[in-house]
Length: 101
Ligand SMILES: [Zn+2]
Image (cartoon, rainbow, N blue to C red; front, side, top):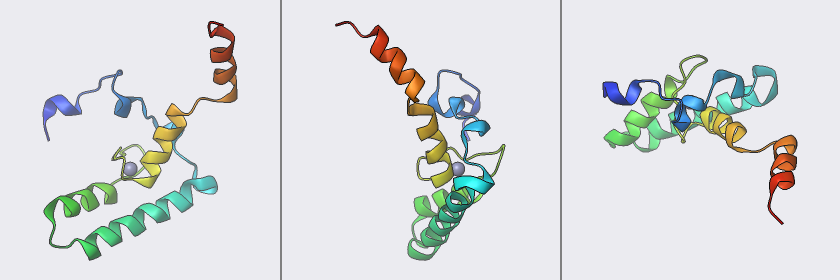
């Protein structure tokens, strides 16, 4: 891995996806984890001769709490990214309040 790409940069979206944004095991977490494992198995089964697909499967397979893959193809990391990017009701009210009329 390129060492420049792995350094922390707070302006980069991937570095803003923190563990607290992930679904909990008792909520959607278990379902998303199952989806990730199914996706890994599908990649290994359907694309066993395609090196990039196998690399993606390896990356998704190693995704775990406090050591996330942060791939857009990962159901768990995709959910966390959506939590970060989807404004809450309170944020929407602030935007509406400050919008020029
Ligand atoms: Zn992941």
